[in-house]
Length: 453
Ligand code: TYD
Ligand code: MG
Image 1 (cartoon, rainbow, N blue to C red):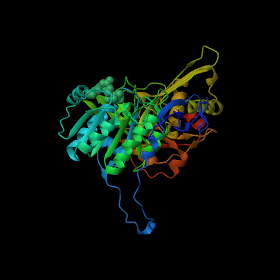
Image 2: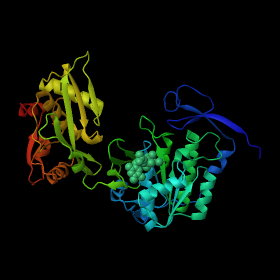
Image 3: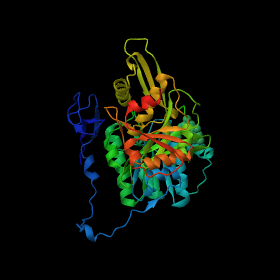
Image 4: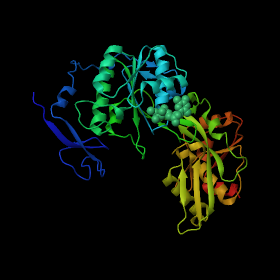
């Protein structure tokens, strides 16, 4: 059959395709996201493999079988995955270059190879010698770990047929190339086509699949957003390159809860689990410093104690600076406005820098009270007792609103030796906590301001 070359344009944001180029994607409205793609006109036909006819069933008659999860053997990662992996499930691990994605998945591949059978690790970015060097550094010796340095899908497919692994790692999806697509690797069409090929294989054979994906500077997965829709689980690997801790966060999970996080530390011998993340994030806390307050964020089902810092200094230029690290910038602006209005702080003439120590990022509203307390403390130069924690959401009228799971948060604080806690009055009234921490209920920011004068 004659094959015609087809040129079209695909949006790097939403993945939609068009015959003509335009400055704005007609589908998702993003600007400058259309990219030229070329493919054989007959290419798509083979994509939809015939599916066996399936009959509809009454819901009540379907036997309830929980999806069997296969632990990775790395506790923090299993926590994020909601217990473990699922046969035929495909996990996308996305993160900045150099953050440790290859390291983590090589460790996972090794653990899986020891327990569930052969694991094929396909590296499109590194040579076999480089992978070997990393494995030696990580002291990985699983006999069932099979490595392939390859970027072409047909070769990978051939290796899959030959090895028939229980799990497959593709490092990375941006370097994988599907021959039906003529655009270079990393373009929308290539990413989608290669990912679909991997997913089809995993679903058909029950292989557990891992795709490594790089993210762009603004944090999105390089390539179409559709990649996130195609896979079963999306994990983001976060962290500052100059810090040693790394966070794996689930943003999508068809087999478990989302927004779970796991904490790791990058060491000489690879990624190590951090069993006591709160302890790690509080480990470098200055004693009796002004502008430093501990808050508690629930990330998924787990509480994390975090140190919030605020530096408040006279503003020397026109408009004052508001700089946030780890804290949402708009949330910071809002809290500053509420503090000005309700506590009469003259923040209009001050620069305010707020951050979560240790490079952690969180947008949990329950951190509001800690952020406000840190700003008041920094503004007035009055330290907050180091063994006191502040938990609560702040409303626009300066009211302190109740937060969920207050008992879990207090227990975590107690475990780390805290003696006092400021919590929303709404929580205090119904509190089911009888531990050692002395709990003070706060109903408005003005009340906090008075406590701190
Ligand atoms: P890597 O897994 O290659 O990152 P990615 O695949 O996300 O691009 O990890 C890169 C960094 O990790 C590199 O700077 C070296 C560091 N590293 C360690 O600190 N310890 C180790 O044991 C390993 C293997 C890497
Ligand atoms: Mg890598």
